[in-house]
Amino acid sequence: MEAHLRAMDGVRWRDAVDPEIEDRLAAAVDELALLPVLDATVARIVAAVEDPDAASADLVAVLEGDPAFARRLIDRLDDPGRPPPLRVRTIRQAVLGTGRPALHRLALEVAVHRFLAETPAAGAARARLRHNASVAAAAAVTIAARTGTPPAVPHLAALLHDAGELVLALAFTPSTCAALALEHPNPTDRARAQRTRLGVDHAVAGAMLAERWNLDEGVPEAIALHHGGATGTASPTTEIAVVQLAVQVPHLASGGEPDHAVLWAALERCRAPAALLDELLADPAVAAPPRPADRARPGVAASGRPGAQPSTSSSPRSATSAASRVL
Image (cartoon, rainbow, N blue to C red):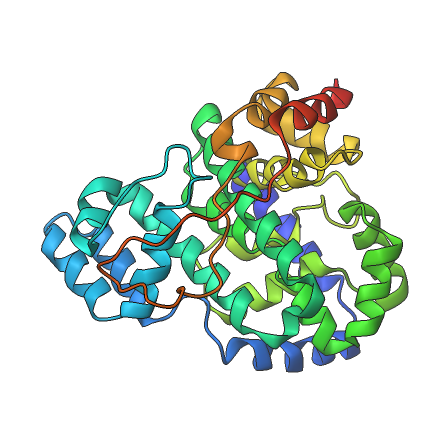
């Protein structure tokens, strides 16, 4: 039954796009896809993590082959906002001290933040996109664990849930998209305004980009429906529901009003209580995610330990009071 619902909603989100608008989006997607989010280094890390016969030395060798990526990974591990920060000085320490599942997720996070840092399409929205990606990804992993949902699809979809903002900026104009973001700080309201004025929202645009990148099955659909689709309440699978809950967390953490309709639909799909949101925003791993590193700082080698960076997230106390409004 769940697979049937998945197929139905998958068709709905794609068929809702006008052909002329889809052509316009496709050109923007092709341009962004020239900078792949999951490049060869990340693919090799993922393959080594998933290979039971691969040794830790294999992972070390992959990272040593891409010093710039290794520096970003170590920087992220060593950030004081990471609860707790993992003090590492070498790539080997990073691999052995992190653990394979966590290293898998961390590699994806570094790759996404590197993409956001390097693509000029991010523009003035860069900081917001990076922060929201960090918070939502941390929330997705925690929600998946609490609800017994496999975390791979929710984690990657949460990281990329707002990538469609970049597609829209290229397909239309950055000034148009910036004006919509300023006028509609609430992400659900902004998605509705995008559908009205542009004929498509950032969720569908992001799903098209995820498809172009050939990301894992389920990731494009989870991105497309992270605001509940055209109805605002479509939550056909637990993986999608986890993403829908997770992407509300950055907005709640900043004191914003939640999207009650999609939250209740997602909580029902996950069979989770609304109090889960309060628990998430009281969790340091979610409320204070590591600050994403745009680039390696001068003088920091791949085997060195980067310096501290301040956290940019909201306090757990204010976040919890925001989440309580869902109840």
